[in-house]
Length: 469
Image 1 (tube, one colour):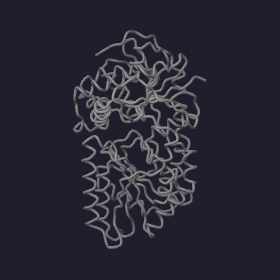
Image 2 (cartoon, rainbow, N blue to C red):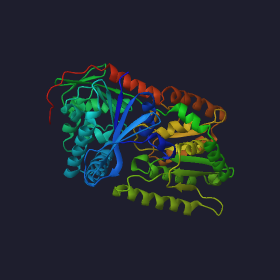
Image 3 (cartoon, rainbow, N blue to C red):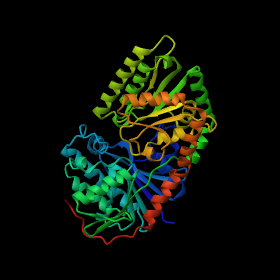
Image 4 (cartoon, rainbow, N blue to C red):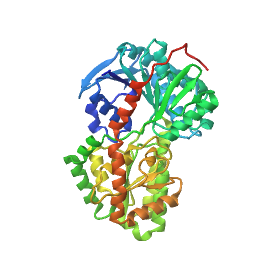
């Protein structure tokens, strides 16, 4: 079996995962992959250095070998805080109004991708499979090809791919997208994002998309498909049964004092629809005064990307909104929102999920959203809770028996909360049974096998000189 070389912006060592809080899908999924495949996980350490030297810190734990590099402060500002998170992230989440276009951001993005390529290329052996992840590293495949690598190289995008009419607002968009043609396999979370990519290729690059998923632009060919990511079902099931989860369950149930718990767990980000969620919940409190004292919303929202000004604005706005709602509706022995800006370990979260009768997950746009799947996986089969899920989350395509809502509609959110409260146990069990089957069968193992199998079966195309737009 070929080695698997995984390359991502950040590397999360296995030992850190039990304490890292509400982690995104990337770190959880890749650790699961590398426990089975031998190989290396390469990326940025998250640390700064005065001068980039290409020095790598190699570490092996839990069957996973990691290789990390430090970046200069300018690299972090331009590549990570700049182009990745102030340009691509908002644009790919349909927030063109928040996207910032600064030439220095683009230069830093290209420079760091070159540094990744220069450093990791000597580690890659001829038969290795190379799997590059996410929007931070779109040009990396082309950078590796420019250094002579002929390996099978795949790319997986964990966030949405925007419609062509939005993507063309990005300066040098064609140049960026053409670098994706250096890969052998490109994976997206859903068919919607895949269709958006194919539309761009046909409209802007004059390419051809075959029914079998092959995309042809000039003399380049690449296979593209949707590979919905899942949770590590076995590992999460063990976390649900752990003593830590049981303690968290009891703690939340005791503090609820007989009231229903609505839970939301999200990284503090404008794509997660937290303001819309609070406003929808407020509408419920307005319309159903008789229910106010019988439930509360527990919103866990660990801060992220504090260096980006937009995120500080989000935090201040949500602090103000939650305070205003609590001030308007609270009584001496009840507050409607428990708003928590800290992270919890996976086992604790599993206990909280199981203790909550309702999950309220309302992203405005999400590549997948694994919290929705974790909530389903954490439920008691004999008395499961109800999942309320934004129809704009990638997970909505698989979890069709959730209560799907338009997160922009306060009334839909309010109505869904009331429907969840009134839902008979038989219907809750029926809906959960359908969703847990999807969560169990379409888990992270199935995702990994599907993508790696496609990469193993990819035909290395005849390479020509790199094209530049």
